[in-house]
Amino acid sequence: MIDSAVHVRGLVKRYGRTAVVDGLDLDIAHGEVFALLGPNGAGKTTTVEILEGYRTRDEGTVSVLGEDPGTAGRAWRSRIGIVSQTAADASELTVREVVSHFATTYPRHRDPDAVIDQVGLGEHAKKRVGRLSGGQRRRVDVALGIIGDPDLLFLDEPTTGFDPEARVRFWQLIRRLSAEGTTIVLTTHYLDEVEALANRVAVIAHGQLKIIGEPATLGDRADAGAVVSWRENGRLMEAETLNPDQFVAELVRRNSGIVPGLSVQRPSLEDVYLQLISSNSSTAALWKESA
Image 1 (cartoon, rainbow, N blue to C red):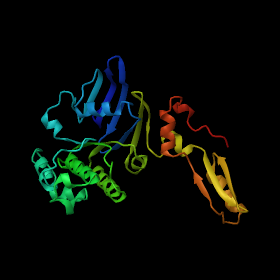
Image 2 (cartoon, rainbow, N blue to C red):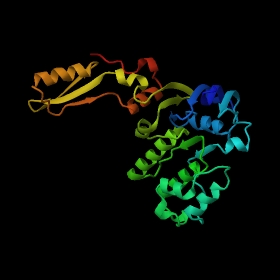
Image 3 (cartoon, rainbow, N blue to C red):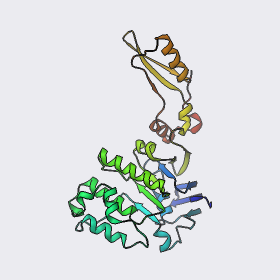
Image 4 (tube, helix red, strand yellow):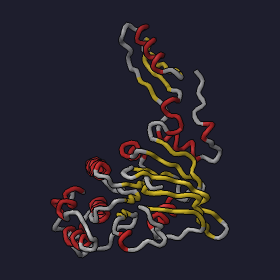
């Protein structure tokens, strides 16, 4: 618990007789980028709101940065950054005015102009927020989430509306924050974003933790069977194998080092995720492959 930025045991939240979070255990290390995935209604938003101190719990133990978020005070809250799905309402202020104003509400904060540049709004600093595009307004939300130099940053669908260039720039920012020691909890439907950023990922369905691990190995992806495809005599060939390295080596030997159209495909993170949240799935049944 001392080594965890977030420590959760037996978390339960009910609405009426329905447990939307049902006995959740979770640990997130300091400086980790941790992705929380799940379909709509899975309980992930409720879980995050409890961690942020905005929603009460019915059962369980929760520690965030060493304190119970249900009773923590202003000093604790100043160490938390939040980028929610709801955009900030400051349409009549300029980007610089709103970011500079929010900076004054924190006992420590980053330089407003530097933050504006980091989120890619330097050339729009004097523009009123209400005149920005949807993606640009989302970048303002990100700026407000990091202006207080948080120890823990919650990101809820942060890149919605971003163009590809803005997403890449955002990813660079998150990697920089993580390298500086900021703990980041990310919820997103973009699984490529999870693969690019997260140290670990947890999948929640029906209020329960289904699996947790590194994106590259979640659901035994690294050891799962693969589909090898190539062209032979003008025809597309495919084969499923548990030993793709050995199979490819044999293809290369058989074709004197040249294998046209060669590709190797393993289960993607999306494949694993969809399998986990399907009603008939079980972790043990993932990727039963035959050689």
